[in-house]
Amino acid sequence: MSCGDPAADADALMQRRKKYDKTKICVKCKIAQGNLVIRHAVYCKECFISLIVHRFRRALEPAVNPKPDGPRRTALKPTGNLLVGFSGGLGSSVLLELVHRCYVALDKTTMPADGGSHHPRHERVWKKVTVCYVEVCDAFPGMKDRSDEIAQSVARYDDLEFVSLRIQDAFDPSWWERTGGKPYPPELGVTLGDEALLLGSLSSASPDPLTSLRAYLTSLPTPTAITSTIQTLTRLLLLHSALQTNSSHLVLGTSLTSLAVSLISGVAQGAGFNIREETQEDWTPDTVPTADPTHPRPTRKEKGKKATQVPGKRAVRIVRPLRDIGMKECAAWAWWAGVPIVGKEKWGWAGAKPGIGTLTKAFIVGLEKDYPSTVSTIVRTCGKLAPKGEVSGACILCGRPAQRGVQEWKARISIRSRPPPPSDGSPDAPAGPQADVEADALLPSLTPYLCYACHTTLTSRSARPVPSPWAAVAPSPVAPLPVWAEARLSSAAGGDEEIAHAHEEVMQTRRVGQDEMKDIVQEFLLDD
Image 1: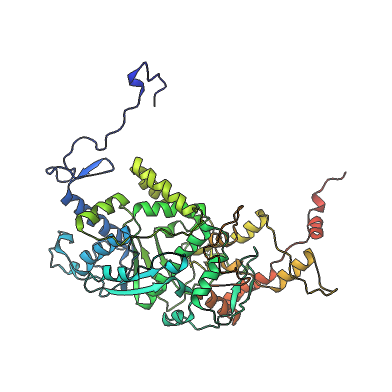
Image 2: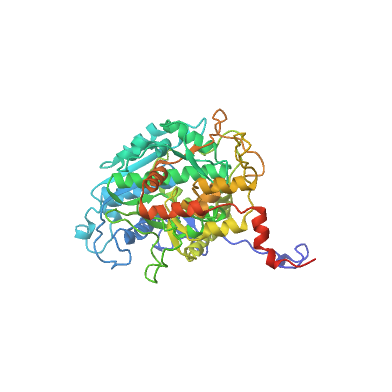
């Protein structure tokens, strides 16, 4: 923008850039007239469809083989089947259509030209492709159940198996056993009303999964925590379903726009250490935490490992093949390819305020409309970031790497309020800070098992009261935990040596009293 006077000098106004650069002719074939403008580049319909297929294969195929950095000319040989995470939205609908065309129906128009259509490279990559849908309507009041619509949409495709789950399966021990999880007694919970996140016993020995889900969501402090928790539960349900179906790859329909939203909102919620996992990650179940302070430092070769893997466990690789395709390109491709969009209902309830994810999405979508190249710049910039610090294991809730020493750092810089412990009325019962110290020394906490993002989600509270999605459900003093978290805690309590190190560290955590703090800083105080 010029500093001149627009009223007196017409050249002082900055000229608006054209929607396309030079011509209306397609920039790829140089013959046909363009039908679509993408980031100031003009494409015709035929070239645009082939461009989307090329970008999809370019993002997916390098991650098919166990070693992504291997030769590109080798055949695609995955170690298991393929699981497609389907939500019925725009991105997942486009993803399912592309997967079926390129790897199930083997459409010759989508195959590379080199080698011929009958080349061994063009044989079917995955012998079995499963579509998994997680219904979340039970988490929000008044939300429509779309399981039947999703099943009819998937039934359009041949040679695909369909698996339907519900969000409350995350609290169902029977589902956990069906996926191959180790049975455990459902008796542990967490006090989400206390910032110390102390573990305790559930009042009911075998709570209903739906009741447990709503009790857990009601105990969360903010709307942002509720939506983030639903996303985490959905992701873990898909991962364990991939293990159940013997799948080595899980593909998600995250477009370039959605990826930018996930990156920015994740950083805003404290998930900067896991920013690389938003694009692609290798997840192995039952990773072992190394919270023991005496654990040796990893060598230079071991620093790249995200977690210690248990032998015999199959890793699941999460790939987002649409990460180079924006929301506008997905909508245009779905229109021209005739892909029906079932529609994805917005999460929310009456009186709920928009969380960080909702605000970030509104900002990114508006940014893409006016400045489309900026969204891809966000993704490329975040792709260059590298986490700082060492990995101490996997988070017990989200399953992603946890940074070593982050909870100690947060404890030093945070000022928290603790509710007073209940008193039994006896004259010998301790009260005040000394009671807090003794309570911390006796009760274990969930904090050492969590990453920074999950700990912030459970403990960060809003300054204003937030209406609960289920007003009739009273917040439980001890909220239930997802089945994978409770199974790991049960194995730790059962005597697992490597997990017990984290349990020891919990027992050593305590709150310092006021007199003890004065004694610590006494030598640094100046005389009056």
